[in-house]
Amino acid sequence: MSAGHHHHEDQKHPDDAQGHHDDHGHDHSHDHHGHGHHHAPASFNRAFAIGIALNLAFVAVEAFYGWKVDSLALLADAGHNLSDVAGLVLAWVGALAGRFLPDARHTYGWKRASILAAFINSVVLLVAMGSLAWEALHRLQSPQPLQGMTIMVVAGIGIVINTATALLFMRGGEHDLNIRGAFLHMAADALVSAGVVIAAALALWQGWTWLDPVASLLIAVVIVAGTWSLLRQSVHLLFDGVPPGVDLHAVQDFLESLPGVTRVHDLHIWAMGTTEIALTAQLVMPDGHPDDAFLQSVTTQLHERFRIEHSTIQIMREAFSKACGEH
Image (cartoon, rainbow, N blue to C red; front, side):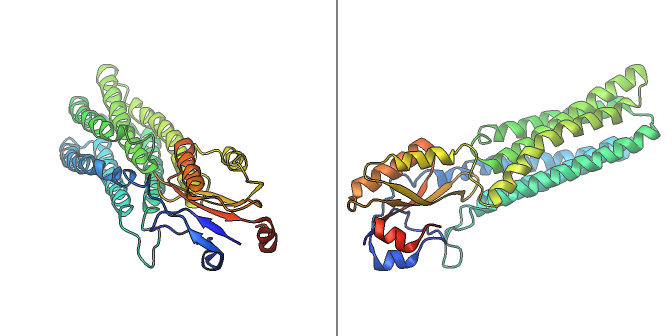
């Protein structure tokens, strides 16, 4: 019997049957598409550094003026922005941890840290919005006079800083859940600051002090709706769910359509991190063992069609597959 594997040199899936590798064949190792994606998070190092520095400075300004004019809204928003700095630090740590090289104890490295960071980031944002809503409800019962002009100026600075920070992460959100989390976090802050400015302006103009907490509640609802999908998606990936954008049935159909393949066993597709996808599969080929060119073609097509970077393909004969049994 013979088994053919394609993998990157530092990648092994725990489900791989070591006995098959040792006793039944030879390896086919290629590394033709393993370069480039490891450097994606690194390009955001500057974005994280700038975002954290800007937001820390803004928290100091907002807290100072909030204390000076006795504005609960500004002090609460300063606290919220401080939690966002923590969120940015978390996302950055997640991105950097994903670049640690695999070792004997962590054969995948720490790529999954980025998924964990996206999950914690979404939870932190939901908790922050919950506290904001609680404060808004409290203030609806006892509206307080506002120092409108000071609040507008400080919150206006917040819009500029948060929008600028969000734009730094905008281009990475499409392909990286962790970067998307950072983008959502900063975009949410820009919305909060905009709501504070509008509410303060109307309070100055019409004396509607109740509008400030109402605007806060509306913003919280919008942000929670946006964050919920991030939470759901990160939990899905943490539990080895098939990454969004990959159609499992389409991959199965593609593998079954390959010449000489009669069945596909043990097909697994999961996320190694927020940017990398892995696959393992057993292809039943009763009429012989394919050459390197066949495996090279399969892994190249999996990468080009489905953005699957790490493929481990095991070739099995009919009799051997029956002996192993279907999983």
